[in-house]
Image 1 (cartoon, rainbow, N blue to C red):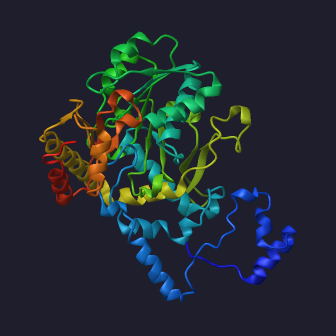
Image 2: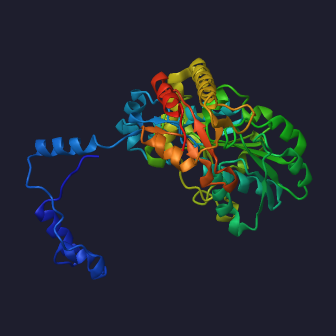
Image 3: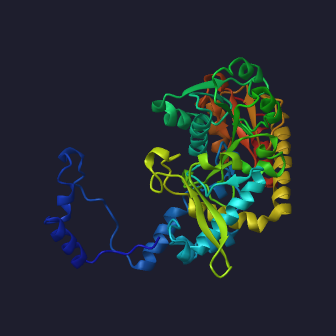
Length: 446
């Protein structure tokens, strides 16, 4: 964003309006001991061109994701975003547009959202995808609320193999609603324990499963669907690129699908803003949170788009609202629509296949080294768990010194997995990255 400085006159006008004498008065409410009264120590005055050069020299000292060999995923995946996505999504018609309340002046935004909904419906195998939500975690939490509302039961089973941060958000959402969350353990293969589910189905509204789960493992959704009978099945997909290879959850009987759409044309961006995916069948569409854009015709027979469903507090009586979600991640959804349009159906499959094969190749490279092994033997997409005999902190820092981010240390989330790392591989990992990792691991010891 460009910097536009205030003039001295601007500052004086603002201070006068606030009833203050100087800038320091803005901080008069702060304790004196926390105020730094020393000079900052800025260099002598520089020309604009010299400032730009100086800031550039400072900036190149930083290490960004492109300068590292990163095998970190866990819900935020480093994919290539074609420059045209930035260009089109940055056009004024989109970048300055707000939520499309007035369809007659928002046809471009509504059209983009409609296309997004259509493509995501195909990818997830469901009738309807809404106009997007905040992120993958909040989408899952909203799905749990929706499922308990449909079933009129206040008990829900959630796999502990779902992203732990997603699980925490669910607990936060349901804490004061009287909803009991029961965590389902995972077995030695890293899959959700179906036997546990079968034993705890009494008075349950439904079950939520990661697909793929937090460990990158592809759950047996069809078996889980059969095990729970008529209960609601909710899925959470943090890496939707996987659906170019594996069967969409909607086709395997999921009643509500959720996910994180960051992988579709959105940058890592220090953790957000991201894109919440939420879909269901026509049967439950009026219980769905968020908004839905539909296609219609105007009085002249021309194709047009309108908000056909928006069951939120600002549109209907509060008691009948399905959620207090007030907006969709419109710009992020637009980027996803542009990105998927560029890939096309064949490109989507080919990119998924490439991620799959590359991840399995890197897995083989790592476990070929002494002291490393695959923790779970189950099928995975582009993310897997490696356990090691070495001190995880020392290993991680050793590789970081060589500009390698060796995945996510799982001891951060689970005490029983302190010896393990969650490794992710995307198309942004090349031959040089793999060779660098292989060389760094060669003969490593604490």
